[in-house]
Image 1 (tube, rainbow, N blue to C red):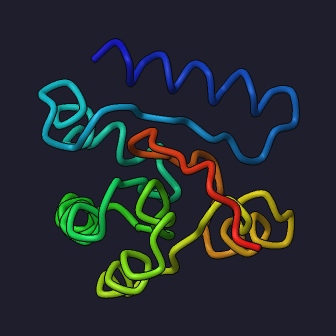
Image 2 (cartoon, rainbow, N blue to C red):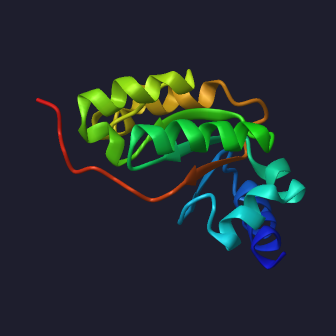
Length: 137
């Protein structure tokens, strides 16, 4: 699969410059044919140190988290539009992973905490692409 080869090349190039962690965003949902094929790829899964899954709602977040676990991924947390709603954030807690909003994800301490749990950090996959501009006060 060309995208896996591209990711492998990118990781090797970054590692050669001293990078220890790379973040890759995979857009579209887990059931889109291209994304589903990529997620099922054992070669791609080997590249991933963990996944931060972005979803628009709590049910999608919990279902996506379960699907990624079924495929053998380590889900490090949830984020996305669901973080705009305090109720959706609480409901997403059913996935038993941290839920990160914009405020948390822009905090260097949070980033350090997320990557500290990755064994042999190489690539963190960000699934989805939804963001929330809502800032908690």
